[in-house]
Image (cartoon, rainbow, N blue to C red):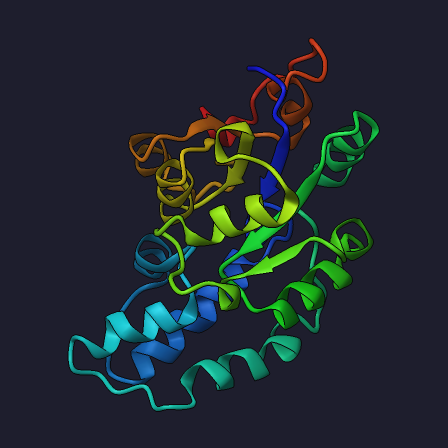
Length: 229
């Protein structure tokens, strides 16, 4: 793969290991509201999408979540992650390698800025990204639309065709491809939707130790994690 001009990271599931906790709570909340959905189905339907889009989807089926649903969700995040949050395995080393190579990078997330600062701060990654955080709140449409990635690229001063996105959701891969960007789909999570990620146009990889090689930074390739087979 040719070395990119800009690397754009998703946040949840790519930098920070939040998907299990978040989707367990979301499936419980939605089920309590009358929209019965399992944890597994919740991940399949909603991973990578803004919480406002989740609410819109649910309410289109006749289940009212309340005007304060998104705010209640955001307010509850510090408590949800209070027992500790970890970065995705080996991602800090991959970021360090990208920084050493002089390649610009940023985050473009369906989450709010406050959430990114919370989760990146808890995992020690915030200093790497503090000045380059892009949220769905900055654009008219969230993933799977390309708006957020196009906004991030423009703000960072790069053309879309020179950008490479690191994603873990079908919605995110779809958005990156719609933006005209290359996309690597991280599937190190045992519950990742590998067929969906690949069908959406992502190049699968299952271990963050592979990332520098995939970006053309060195010739070393680590064996894929067992979950990526």
